[in-house]
Length: 432
Image 1 (spheres, rainbow, N blue to C red):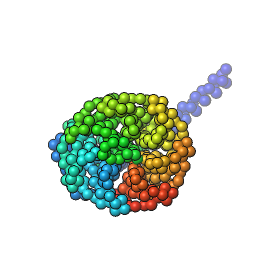
Image 2: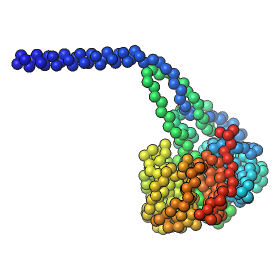
Image 3: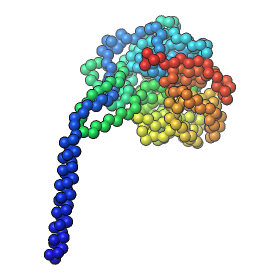
Image 4: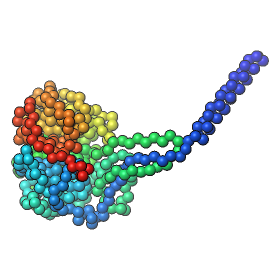
């Protein structure tokens, strides 16, 4: 027993000496840690007073593309959203030689739609209506205030500074360099910009309105069919009667959360969210009726429809970091019971458009994919243009209009096997 006790005591002493040694090293390490200054980037809100915000709306001379977002084509003109800044007007009667007409300055603008001589645009939570009979001099004729609810769509990236509402309305965000003092090993991890798809988006098919409305892209939050404008914000589907010169809000429905895009097809609306695709019946246009919900993995997703098939791109992003990157095909012949029939792995799919079985998918920094979707169960890749940064597309009358960080690029796809480049309006270095 005495021998065991001695062994035990020696073992305990060794443990004590070891702990003292480790603690001493720790103290030495702490003494070596010094204060250091690190620099990091964060996003700072840009404010306007209420008066500045309203007075800023005006037609200006053409400007360079900076961050082109959603696109809308109407009557040989391209209307291109400059994220949070306004709308470029471009004469596209000759896609081989487009010419800039002017720029409508609209603070905090992200969505546009056109019917007849009226252009509809959002500005923060307001809906603006312009008379565009004279495209050289568009006139603001109506502002409907506080009709949209956006929870965080202003945020340009992470990390960001908190908003101080006493300073006014947040109309944009800018990157700023911040210095911080820390002790020891300092680590800083900057996530990529969170340019929400909800902010920059448009679909590659004509809204079947029976009237004189235009064509949007798949990332759009605005859709016109007949005498009604349908718009989605983060949580709502809002319906406006636009039969008169001044639109009237006639309906609002709460859809849930993270609503992103809207696409009209025949008598239905297809609404994309981070977790589902909603199908609404607009046979009674002033009060859309929900028909079904097709759920999918949490992902950023626009949708387009042709015939009895809906094509949805799912993408991993800052808002949906555990998502997948794929193209899903859903049979919507019975809109009350949509069924997935196929899916295809992608790289980073954004907007998409389809015309007579020709499917075009924006792959973000990874270019543009041209696909044969005549058999939705067996879609084939025809071409992958990699030297292009793309966001959304509009295929219309054999002209493919592509928007993204590369600018506005147009192709003739009358021969789908051999796309012919028509023109490029590049992003200007000074605008960036």
